[in-house]
Image 1: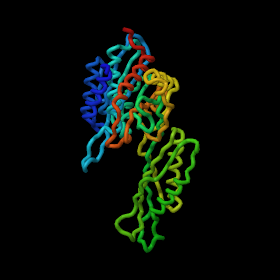
Image 2: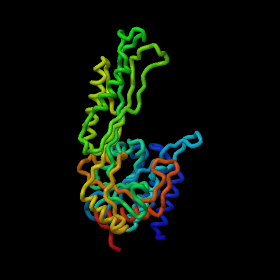
Image 3: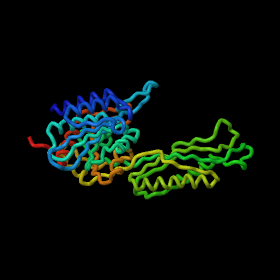
Image 4: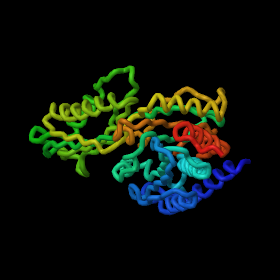
Length: 373
């Protein structure tokens, strides 16, 4: 093993042993900040609550490139106890980015600025927003990220230059009718009837079928303990998915209208509210091409996969939504990962870690140019 290979394994082992959920990454952020400081970075902590930013500046003017890694674990119930587990590979992402950052500091960049972003709370889909609010990308021109992929998408020794996540949002709706006795339904307005009409209206929504999308009611609560009372309130939750942002905007508008108009057909009033979510991926062609070049350099032509489309969401995409001029790339790294992301027993082949480091080193070198020894 090279020094870099040994180091990334060591960093992963440390991070894997201190899993912490979103906005509670106290030990994780302290460890990452300390390692960046030791490598010679100017370090800022408490970004977006628990995020960490390291900055390294070259001698010559140039662009600002940022490497972003998420660092939160997921909460799982094991033996009736809630515990944090790195079941989505964020420990691997942070290990790859930290090791790359250390090697880049050792070699030195010739021009521009390198920023290392360790982001909290990706799983809560608020971490990127909090980092943005704290100015993390105000000066960034190029932003790179990566994620381990399940074995069904990519095996060890393979990588995709572009992982296209879909947009994912959740909408809540409250419906108001009028209470009445079950024997006198004409004196009330049944909120369940309003909800049923809203569900039917949602199911009739149509958008361009060429773009993968779905909208469906996933929760419905109405009625109380009495079986002979007309309920005056109902609460609904709707899950929305779309493979591009324009389709998601259309779905959100049509779903809110369907809920309000559907409920109105039986006399109910309804109010729909978007709880949150994340946008779909939008990448810079030049960065995707650079990622292809880097993957071929590190893994060979047989290791280069086509772009992968996934309905899963990622809050990384808030960065470019906030700053459309940002040049963005996001890689998918093969790791023989089984049985799947977010499974408490998730495992992967640690031999993928140096692959990620080397791919990032190649890309940074092409943008900022490493100093020649």
